[in-house]
Image (tube, rainbow, N blue to C red; front, side):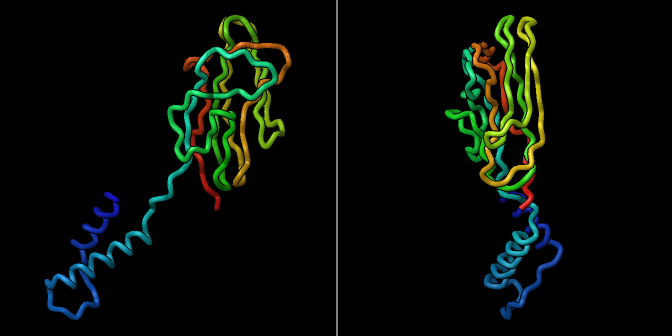
Length: 178
């Protein structure tokens, strides 16, 4: 709104014109001119609808066993398209989405995981047995409205995550192609 007001003010200071029949300076003409300027600014505005974004951490040090990793400590969730209860991000529209994660093992364990897009494996991830080893990954996804992205532990053996803000998942940027 502030940008629209500034643009309207600048437009008004450069040229005030209208089809008003009242004499110069009449309230009705000024109001009509302002209304027309706001309509022009709205049509030409580069302001886009709110884009989705989120930043989520794992609260504790959960032990995994072939389940979805739930980043349940949500700091930012613009549009509420990330569900911390399920661990799933759902694309609100067609476009390119850049998602990133950092997975850290607790102690000297390994973590084997996979990125999934609509229940199909997109990529694998792995941390080695070094103390608190981690892996960061960033991917560009071309998604359609309703597509789901999540990270799943991929073995039946129990492996422990190092949570409490050492482990995160976030949507960096999204570009709509609609």
